[in-house]
Every structure is written in structure tokens, then in C-alpha cells.
Image 1 (tube, rainbow, N blue to C red):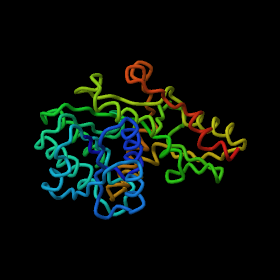
Image 2 (image 1 turned 180 degrees about the vertical axis):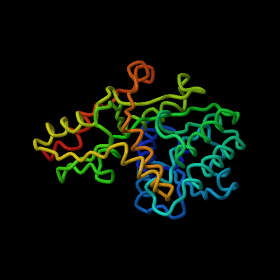
Image 3 (image 1 turned 45 degrees about the horizontal axis):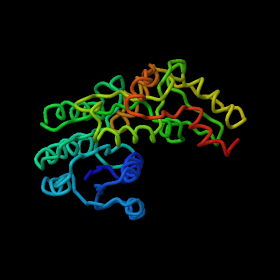
Length: 293
């Protein structure tokens, strides 16, 4: 039996789908205030929803009880009013402790790439969880994905392809191994019983590293029209980081600064060992934007 924490999130739902396709019992940890439609979607996949409050040690232990593995990708990011300390740090640490107390054999944690961030709230939280996992007594896996295609090529971060505008951070010339959510979910699902993933930290990217400006040119070829580019330089990002007060704003700006410096991850060997066919940026773009061409 496998418990997926953050099951109603974008990544969590894909992980749940991957696991149910493999067979076996999958539990999805949800909040009391989770959207009914999201919970219903889990149930339609065959996932058993389990309600748990991150502040309740007893509820977390009950959620983990009887499970062989736990996969957690839960985060406060993108949830207005939610605290990084409560979810990404204290909540994750409480879940790790509950899983260990209940005799869970393996814990798979979805963090992010080791070159992303430094001393912003989200990075500090993620690295704290990574350190704790390595001494928790369970078999552990830390997955460190690079920048998600679905997030960083979206209007939320200034990449509005429908409007013909794209925001680039830094010079736009530093290659990044953009990764598809589907592929990260695939690694998470494989990690629960993989010897390759046993007590391992695994950096994850796409099949090639593509500079942001080259990505814009690729998208232009897919949609068949010109995209206006806005450049936000590192100096402006550093000023934004210095003035940011909210945790999520500081963390997102730190991610933008790291993006400006690039993140190329060699993936041929890793993908082959896990049997994952990585999604290229072109294939993702054609599948996502092809109808706009």
C-alpha cells in the first residue's frame, strides 16, 4: 500500500494515476478543505482519500498506518495564505516522523534541483527535509527535478503564449533542463520499489537543455506566430528579492534568479536506468500548444 501526500495537487494527481495504473492500493492524503472535485477525481482513479491535518501527529500516523511506502510532493506554493514553514518544512518533517513511527519501509520525497535556491524559505525547508530523511531509519529517495515546463511556460510566471508574450529571467541564454510533470511523476512511481532509487538523491531534467530564448523560438515555430519577449535581468531580480517580504514571493524570486543562471542536467543514463522516456520540450509544446498553431 502506498500513501501519496499532496494527492490533490497537480503533481500529486499524476503520481496517483501512475501508481493506480501499476496496480495495488493507493491512498491519497487530502486536507479537510480540499476541493470536492479534486477528491472525486482521485476516487475515480481508484485512489482511497485519507483526510489528515498536518498539525495532528495522530492523524498523520493514522494516514501512514499499514503503508509500505509514502510519496510526498506537498507544498504551500501556489496556495494563497498558506505557510511554507507549516507545509513544506514542519508538515513534511511531521509526515516523515509519522511514517518512520508507523514502520513505513520507503519514503520518496519530491524536492527540487540542488542548484536551485540558497537561503530563501522554500529552499531552506526542502533541504531540511532532505537532511532529516537521510537519518530517519527508512529507505529514502530524494527526487530533485529541474524547472517544470507546465509552471515556467505559463501565464502565472509571465509566459503568456496565448497573448503572444513571454517573460525571460536573466539573459535567456543559459540552458535549462526543463522537465515535464508527467516524467517527474513517473520517477516518483518507479522509485517506490527501485533499487536504483534506494537511499539516493536523483537530479531530474528533460532529455536536453534548452536556453529560454531558444525555447521561445521553438514555441514560435509551434504556434506559427511571433512572441514578444520581456527580459527581466539579474539586477532587477536581486532588487526584487531584497524587497520581498512574503515567503512565497521571496522563494519564487530566488527560483527566478537560479533560472537566470541555468540548470543543465545530463539525463541519458538516469532515464535509461529507470525506464523513463523523457518528454522533449518540442513534444510537450506540440501536445500543449499544437491546437493554437
